[in-house]
Amino acid sequence: MATWPEDLPQRFLKNSYKDQEPDLVLKTEMDVGPPKMRLRPGAKANVRPFSGDMRLTLTQKAALSDFYLDNCAVSFDFPDPGAESGTIPVIFTAPPEYADTGLFTGGEAVQKVSLKLAKVPA
Image (cartoon, rainbow, N blue to C red; front, side, top):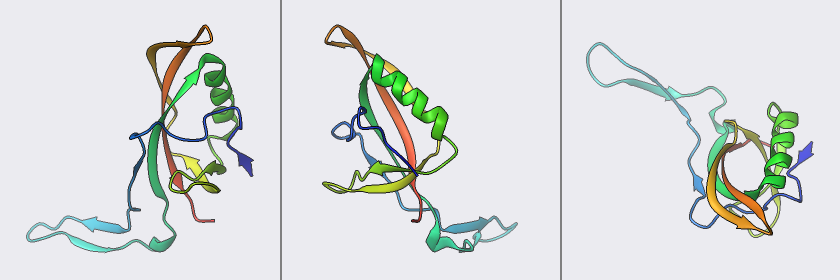
């Protein structure tokens, strides 16, 4: 299994981490009355989406781009955002999104990347 590169940030920016419960319910709209709802088959093994932002230099952006292209269709170990240490198996649920920050570090431009990931059952 691939591992999140050490040369990329290991934590999301403060206050950017968002977590949500897995979608466990199938909902069917009825012609009249409330929708019919039931648990998805295998619901307890569903993925748990989360997202967050990081700041990257252009060198790190290139490294993330290569990592994404090599691993966008497979799971990989990612630093657990809900713990002080350790990793969790995750997948990309959307391509990384980049935005200019107007900041520079060491003469190199800094960009913000937004990641959408999901924890997968181990």
